[in-house]
Image (cartoon, rainbow, N blue to C red; front, side, top):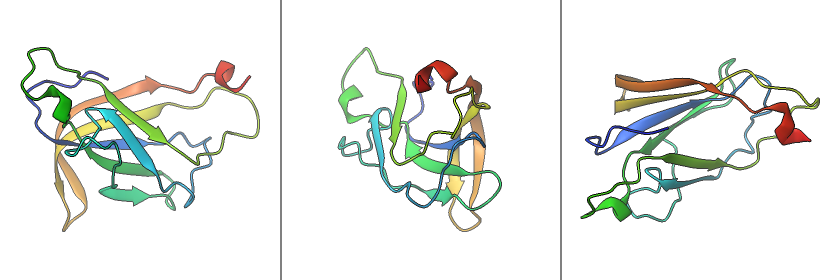
Length: 130
């Protein structure tokens, strides 16, 4: 998902499709491009992780890529690897994988604000399971 270049830090909320078996085994988050983190290591510490509610999601800090510093052409992609998510028992398309981008997160209240962008078209097609 391309992100506006003027963003110098954001919070990305990934809302998992209900068909995916997301649970407490999801502990490692690795990012690239605008999700590489301030140090560029790719290891991401979640701002918030909700895996026990009906809507399961993770909020990750992002929109910072040290590799962009001093360049005139920027990488504007958000790339994240979620490990330990189990595939559905049956082979089928999933409901949408929602990705929302905000520019602020209030740790005291656990709320996001400053909505920037959302996608609702990301699905995991049946072909990926075959």
